[in-house]
Amino acid sequence: MLAFLLMAALNNSIDDLVAKVVTAYGGGAAWQSVASFRETGTVIPAMRPGEGKLTRHWQRPDKLRVEIVYPSNTEIRVVEGDHGTQNGKEATGMGLDAMRLQAARLGLPLLLEQKKSSLRSAGENTIEILLAPQMTLTIEVDPASGHIIKSVGKAEGIEFTTRYSDFRMLDGLLFAFREENSAQGTKTGTNEIDKIELTRTK
Image 1 (spheres, helix red, strand yellow):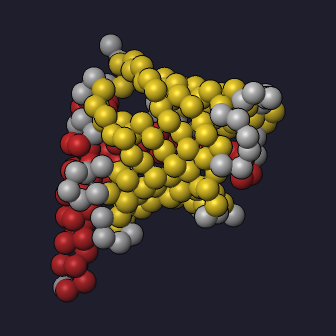
Image 2 (image 1 turned 180 degrees about the vertical axis):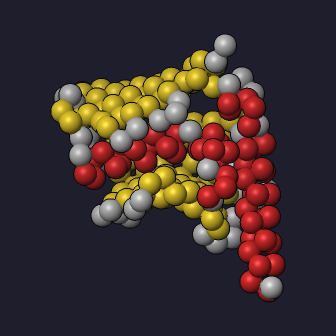
Image 3 (image 1 turned 90 degrees about the vertical axis):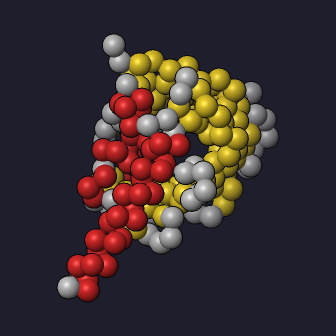
């Protein structure tokens, strides 16, 4: 009986936290109406010289195209579901998993709504989302604002962490315009978003 009560209390606390996040980001109905969005900005790498021009196009439910134009080369990654390409070549293993995790984290408010029944607590103000066997996305929430301040994506052999800041409302939805990224605990770079264009369903 005690275990049942504890589980019920835990589920209620997760439900409350999810509701706070979804409300802070503009509400479930508003996110359900989003068909896609396009982000442009700058990538500031931690381990190579020269900034990159970033263009990301996210399309529900799980399609993402990322283009980064550096002074010396261009990187293009495309993922849809469990298939992806990197610079036109089929992506597999860790490379594909990294792309799937990025696509998932860009649609987090929608993902929380869709996965509500299978979410689990991973600590205070922390929620784990099971994306696939051996693949999870764990978010840390600021309880005062409902903002997602950190996400940790894990798959076999990899761990990617993103810290979010510079939150702004756009057409009724909340987005983080700054992302600080690391892989396996090593900083990889910072994304600074300049512009976001939304496309809604009819």
